[in-house]
Image (cartoon, rainbow over all chains, first blue to last red; front, side):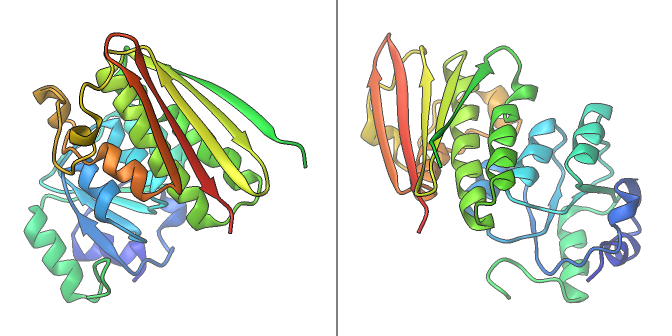
Length: 116
Length: 140
Protein backbone atom coordinates (compact mmCIF):
# COMPACT_ATOMS: atom_id res chain seq x y z
CA UNK A 1 0.00 0.00 0.00
CA UNK A 2 1.25 3.48 -0.81
CA UNK A 3 1.32 6.09 1.93
CA UNK A 4 -0.92 8.23 -0.29
CA UNK A 5 -3.57 5.47 -0.04
CA UNK A 6 -3.32 5.56 3.75
CA UNK A 7 -3.98 9.29 3.56
CA UNK A 8 -7.07 8.68 1.44
CA UNK A 9 -8.44 5.77 3.50
CA UNK A 10 -8.11 7.68 6.76
CA UNK A 11 -9.18 10.98 5.23
CA UNK A 12 -5.98 12.31 6.76
CA UNK A 13 -4.31 15.67 6.50
CA UNK A 14 -0.72 15.60 5.23
CA UNK A 15 1.54 17.44 7.66
CA UNK A 16 4.94 16.79 6.06
CA UNK A 17 6.67 14.44 3.65
CA UNK A 18 4.73 15.10 0.42
CA UNK A 19 7.66 13.81 -1.65
CA UNK A 20 7.45 10.43 0.11
CA UNK A 21 3.73 9.78 -0.36
CA UNK A 22 4.31 7.23 -3.12
CA UNK A 23 6.53 5.04 -0.87
CA UNK A 24 5.23 1.51 -0.41
CA UNK A 25 4.49 0.17 3.09
CA UNK A 26 3.29 -3.28 4.07
CA UNK A 27 2.88 -3.34 7.85
CA UNK A 28 1.67 -1.08 10.64
CA UNK A 29 1.17 -0.92 14.39
CA UNK A 30 -0.88 1.26 16.71
CA UNK A 31 0.24 2.31 20.19
CA UNK A 32 0.44 5.25 22.56
CA UNK A 33 3.18 3.49 24.52
CA UNK A 34 6.57 4.00 22.88
CA UNK A 35 8.16 1.46 25.26
CA UNK A 36 5.92 -1.21 23.74
CA UNK A 37 6.64 -0.09 20.20
CA UNK A 38 10.36 -0.48 20.88
CA UNK A 39 9.90 -3.83 22.62
CA UNK A 40 7.39 -5.67 20.49
CA UNK A 41 7.30 -4.15 17.05
CA UNK A 42 9.43 -5.40 14.20
CA UNK A 43 9.67 -4.24 10.62
CA UNK A 44 6.58 -2.07 10.80
CA UNK A 45 6.65 0.87 8.46
CA UNK A 46 3.68 2.81 9.83
CA UNK A 47 2.97 3.89 13.40
CA UNK A 48 -0.49 5.05 14.44
CA UNK A 49 -0.48 6.95 17.71
CA UNK A 50 -2.45 9.43 19.74
CA UNK A 51 0.65 10.45 21.65
CA UNK A 52 2.13 13.81 20.73
CA UNK A 53 5.73 14.48 21.75
CA UNK A 54 9.12 14.36 19.98
CA UNK A 55 9.83 10.86 21.30
CA UNK A 56 7.17 9.52 18.93
CA UNK A 57 9.28 10.78 16.00
CA UNK A 58 12.50 9.49 17.57
CA UNK A 59 10.96 6.07 18.23
CA UNK A 60 9.88 5.87 14.58
CA UNK A 61 13.37 6.94 13.54
CA UNK A 62 15.04 4.18 15.57
CA UNK A 63 12.61 1.61 14.16
CA UNK A 64 13.13 2.68 10.51
CA UNK A 65 9.46 3.61 10.20
CA UNK A 66 8.38 5.65 7.19
CA UNK A 67 5.10 7.17 8.32
CA UNK A 68 3.34 8.26 11.51
CA UNK A 69 -0.41 8.77 11.61
CA UNK A 70 -1.64 10.87 14.51
CA UNK A 71 -5.13 9.70 15.38
CA UNK A 72 -7.93 11.40 17.33
CA UNK A 73 -7.08 14.66 15.59
CA UNK A 74 -3.85 15.11 17.54
CA UNK A 75 -1.60 17.89 16.24
CA UNK A 76 2.19 17.58 16.33
CA UNK A 77 4.28 20.59 17.34
CA UNK A 78 6.53 22.48 14.94
CA UNK A 79 9.59 20.85 16.58
CA UNK A 80 8.16 17.44 15.82
CA UNK A 81 7.38 18.38 12.22
CA UNK A 82 10.93 19.71 11.73
CA UNK A 83 12.41 16.53 13.20
CA UNK A 84 10.23 14.28 11.02
CA UNK A 85 11.13 16.30 7.92
CA UNK A 86 14.85 15.95 8.72
CA UNK A 87 14.45 12.20 9.17
CA UNK A 88 12.32 11.62 6.04
CA UNK A 89 9.26 10.49 7.99
CA UNK A 90 5.81 11.28 6.61
CA UNK A 91 3.37 12.76 9.15
CA UNK A 92 -0.38 12.38 8.68
CA UNK A 93 -3.22 13.46 10.93
CA UNK A 94 -6.66 11.89 11.08
CA UNK A 95 -9.73 12.65 13.18
CA UNK A 96 -10.48 8.94 13.44
CA UNK A 97 -10.01 7.05 16.70
CA UNK A 98 -7.19 4.53 16.97
CA UNK A 99 -9.40 1.42 16.70
CA UNK A 100 -11.24 2.67 13.65
CA UNK A 101 -8.08 3.88 11.89
CA UNK A 102 -6.29 0.56 12.48
CA UNK A 103 -9.39 -1.38 11.39
CA UNK A 104 -9.74 0.53 8.15
CA UNK A 105 -6.09 0.05 7.21
CA UNK A 106 -6.26 -3.64 8.08
CA UNK A 107 -9.40 -4.04 5.98
CA UNK A 108 -7.58 -2.52 3.03
CA UNK A 109 -4.70 -4.98 3.30
CA UNK A 110 -2.12 -3.48 5.65
CA UNK A 111 -0.80 -6.16 8.02
CA UNK A 112 0.53 -6.27 11.56
CA UNK A 113 4.05 -7.40 12.50
CA UNK A 114 3.16 -11.09 12.66
CA UNK A 115 2.05 -10.98 9.03
CA UNK A 116 -1.61 -11.33 10.05
CA UNK B 1 40.23 -0.61 9.61
CA UNK B 2 41.20 1.01 12.88
CA UNK B 3 38.59 1.23 15.59
CA UNK B 4 36.39 4.31 15.31
CA UNK B 5 35.75 5.95 18.67
CA UNK B 6 32.84 8.31 19.23
CA UNK B 7 31.72 10.23 22.28
CA UNK B 8 28.33 11.81 22.99
CA UNK B 9 27.07 13.90 25.89
CA UNK B 10 23.48 13.28 26.95
CA UNK B 11 21.76 16.26 28.53
CA UNK B 12 19.61 15.43 31.50
CA UNK B 13 17.57 18.58 31.48
CA UNK B 14 15.36 18.16 28.48
CA UNK B 15 13.34 15.03 27.75
CA UNK B 16 12.50 16.33 24.29
CA UNK B 17 16.18 16.03 23.31
CA UNK B 18 16.47 12.43 24.54
CA UNK B 19 17.38 10.31 21.55
CA UNK B 20 19.57 12.85 19.83
CA UNK B 21 22.77 10.89 20.56
CA UNK B 22 21.11 7.63 19.54
CA UNK B 23 20.03 9.17 16.24
CA UNK B 24 23.58 10.35 15.56
CA UNK B 25 24.98 6.89 16.36
CA UNK B 26 22.41 5.29 14.08
CA UNK B 27 23.28 7.59 11.18
CA UNK B 28 27.01 7.02 11.77
CA UNK B 29 26.57 3.22 11.60
CA UNK B 30 24.38 3.50 8.54
CA UNK B 31 26.99 5.69 6.87
CA UNK B 32 29.63 3.06 7.60
CA UNK B 33 27.54 0.50 5.73
CA UNK B 34 26.52 -1.84 8.55
CA UNK B 35 23.48 -4.05 7.77
CA UNK B 36 20.07 -2.48 8.49
CA UNK B 37 19.07 -4.99 11.17
CA UNK B 38 22.33 -4.45 13.09
CA UNK B 39 21.94 -0.68 12.85
CA UNK B 40 18.35 -0.86 14.07
CA UNK B 41 19.17 -3.17 16.98
CA UNK B 42 21.98 -0.89 18.16
CA UNK B 43 19.78 2.18 17.71
CA UNK B 44 16.94 0.73 19.78
CA UNK B 45 19.26 -0.45 22.57
CA UNK B 46 21.13 2.82 22.85
CA UNK B 47 17.92 4.84 22.61
CA UNK B 48 16.41 2.92 25.52
CA UNK B 49 19.62 3.53 27.47
CA UNK B 50 19.61 7.21 26.60
CA UNK B 51 15.97 7.57 27.70
CA UNK B 52 16.85 5.87 31.00
CA UNK B 53 19.78 8.26 31.49
CA UNK B 54 17.51 11.27 31.06
CA UNK B 55 14.66 9.90 33.18
CA UNK B 56 16.67 8.53 36.08
CA UNK B 57 20.20 9.92 36.09
CA UNK B 58 20.16 13.54 34.93
CA UNK B 59 22.04 12.66 31.74
CA UNK B 60 25.44 11.10 31.15
CA UNK B 61 27.78 10.15 28.34
CA UNK B 62 27.87 7.48 25.64
CA UNK B 63 31.16 6.12 24.32
CA UNK B 64 31.09 4.03 21.17
CA UNK B 65 33.84 1.91 19.64
CA UNK B 66 33.27 0.51 16.18
CA UNK B 67 35.28 -2.19 14.44
CA UNK B 68 34.24 -4.36 11.48
CA UNK B 69 33.58 -7.20 13.95
CA UNK B 70 31.87 -5.49 16.86
CA UNK B 71 30.06 -2.36 17.99
CA UNK B 72 30.75 -1.60 21.67
CA UNK B 73 28.87 1.00 23.65
CA UNK B 74 29.39 2.28 27.19
CA UNK B 75 26.49 4.25 28.64
CA UNK B 76 27.82 6.05 31.68
CA UNK B 77 25.89 8.12 34.22
CA UNK B 78 26.41 9.51 37.68
CA UNK B 79 22.82 8.99 38.73
CA UNK B 80 21.36 7.27 41.80
CA UNK B 81 22.42 3.76 40.74
CA UNK B 82 20.19 0.67 40.57
CA UNK B 83 19.56 -0.91 44.00
CA UNK B 84 18.36 -4.28 42.64
CA UNK B 85 19.55 -5.07 39.12
CA UNK B 86 17.67 -8.37 38.79
CA UNK B 87 14.42 -6.60 39.70
CA UNK B 88 15.18 -3.79 37.24
CA UNK B 89 15.70 -6.41 34.52
CA UNK B 90 12.20 -7.81 34.99
CA UNK B 91 9.75 -6.85 32.26
CA UNK B 92 7.14 -4.50 33.63
CA UNK B 93 9.14 -3.23 36.61
CA UNK B 94 9.58 0.51 36.48
CA UNK B 95 10.39 3.36 38.83
CA UNK B 96 9.68 6.02 36.21
CA UNK B 97 7.47 8.86 37.48
CA UNK B 98 3.95 9.48 36.18
CA UNK B 99 4.99 12.40 33.95
CA UNK B 100 7.38 10.09 32.08
CA UNK B 101 4.64 7.47 31.60
CA UNK B 102 2.45 10.14 30.07
CA UNK B 103 5.18 10.65 27.48
CA UNK B 104 4.93 7.02 26.39
CA UNK B 105 7.76 5.53 28.45
CA UNK B 106 8.15 3.83 31.81
CA UNK B 107 6.53 0.50 30.93
CA UNK B 108 9.43 -1.34 32.53
CA UNK B 109 10.72 -2.56 29.17
CA UNK B 110 13.88 -0.47 28.91
CA UNK B 111 16.59 -2.73 30.37
CA UNK B 112 15.02 -6.02 29.13
CA UNK B 113 14.76 -4.44 25.70
CA UNK B 114 18.43 -3.39 25.73
CA UNK B 115 19.37 -6.99 26.54
CA UNK B 116 17.09 -8.30 23.80
CA UNK B 117 18.72 -6.21 21.08
CA UNK B 118 22.38 -6.73 22.05
CA UNK B 119 24.73 -9.72 22.27
CA UNK B 120 26.36 -8.72 25.56
CA UNK B 121 25.10 -6.51 28.36
CA UNK B 122 26.94 -5.88 31.61
CA UNK B 123 25.59 -3.48 34.22
CA UNK B 124 28.03 -1.93 36.69
CA UNK B 125 26.08 0.04 39.23
CA UNK B 126 26.55 1.45 42.68
CA UNK B 127 23.86 3.21 44.65
CA UNK B 128 24.72 6.88 45.06
CA UNK B 129 27.60 6.68 42.58
CA UNK B 130 26.12 5.85 39.18
CA UNK B 131 25.63 3.24 36.52
CA UNK B 132 27.62 2.09 33.51
CA UNK B 133 26.03 -0.24 31.00
CA UNK B 134 28.50 -2.03 28.69
CA UNK B 135 26.97 -3.30 25.47
CA UNK B 136 28.32 -5.30 22.56
CA UNK B 137 26.74 -6.17 19.25
CA UNK B 138 28.75 -8.56 17.08
CA UNK B 139 28.72 -8.39 13.32
CA UNK B 140 28.05 -11.91 12.11
